[in-house]
Image (cartoon, rainbow, N blue to C red; front, side, top):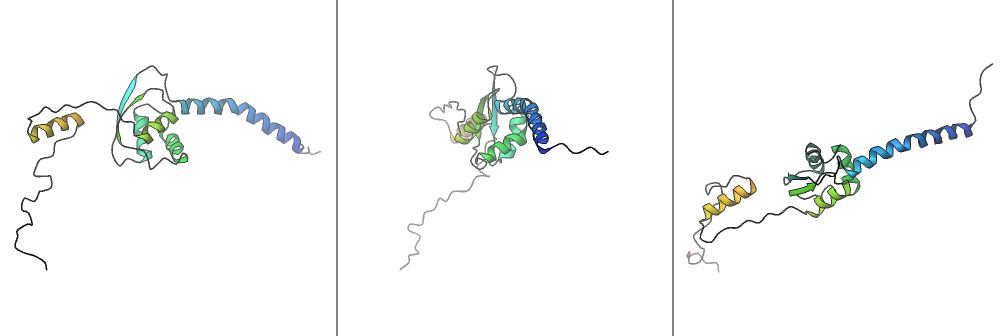
Amino acid sequence: MTRAPPPPRTRRGLLAAALVAAAPVVYGFLSTEFRGPGIPDGSVIDIRVPAGFSSRQIARLLEAEELIFHARIFDTYVRLRGAARVLKAGRYEIPRGASYAYLLKVLRDGAVATTPLTIPEGLRVEAVAERIAEYTGEAPRSRATSSPRRTASRKGSGSRRS
């Protein structure tokens, strides 16, 4: 005697029971993922997003700084929201435990951290360049690497078009 397969009603019941059993696990994973890793303890992470970074590179940077658990999931979230090409470069101060929605809003709006920079009167251009380089963390450009300026004007050059 062979046993007959269970009726379709029983299969649907088993599938429903499996979904009900898996729902808390899936919810727990996703709620933790989208809420952000760690307990919001008030600590703020300072990150710099370089110009030209893709959403995937930004997601990896956030993962390296332990602001998100999975870079691929955050990148997918950003792409599903249609924001992959509108994330802005800059220096951001992001609280630990920030949600995906908050991270996306900050990066899309370009809500960069600002710090005042004072340049005293009378400083020479080289000294100002050094201060700005120190402030931004980049090496100052020398005059040899910057584009040359034209000093001669076209006025009075003797060649007139008629």
